Image (cartoon, rainbow, N blue to C red):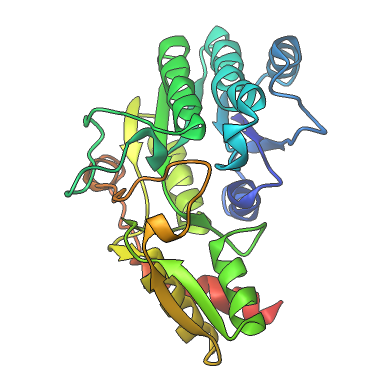
Length: 285
């Protein structure tokens, strides 16, 4: 198959490129905005047709959650309209699509892990545009999988893990929110799941994927520092109200992974095991 990977310079896109070497049976076209502007419908259709694309993994998105509140138009183009262009183009060829989405499609008022059939209720521009993207892909490409994830990090790009490691070495004290609960996702593990979906054959529908376990941002930071050997920074817990941000964030966004595990026959790594793997890579850099 000829598989188009968008957003190849991002965290997930970089991890996908690393794993492509383990799946040489397919041809991969790794693109970012320089190679393909996915907000240009004609460019998308021309690219998909010219390269005889069989499947698309859309790793591209506008993910600056707070900036999205004032850049709604750009967020809408990247998160809602672009997935529609990709879905329409690949459906015309009878192909498949995997669209990466987010826990932000929920408002975070649950107290038990979210399943795929729970009602969505995004309360940020980012979450609203990602939900529209989901709906567009499902409507335009029947052979599509939506994979919602959360708290993504990697050895590539900018993310919470790398920021907390840097701040832990720079500062004597750090305040981190303790009343927002979720599960981190190592982008490498998500990439593995995506390749499992491709290898299995696309089973249309919505799926949830993060690492196993439950944790707060505060506990996550403490674990990052412990594993990275950072002992000089005192981390104190903050209430969300003490750290106001332009975008509202879900207080509870734990995702139930039962469906994707049963459908693809995969095991999902525990969050701390994956964190250790990532920090070991960062320590070698």
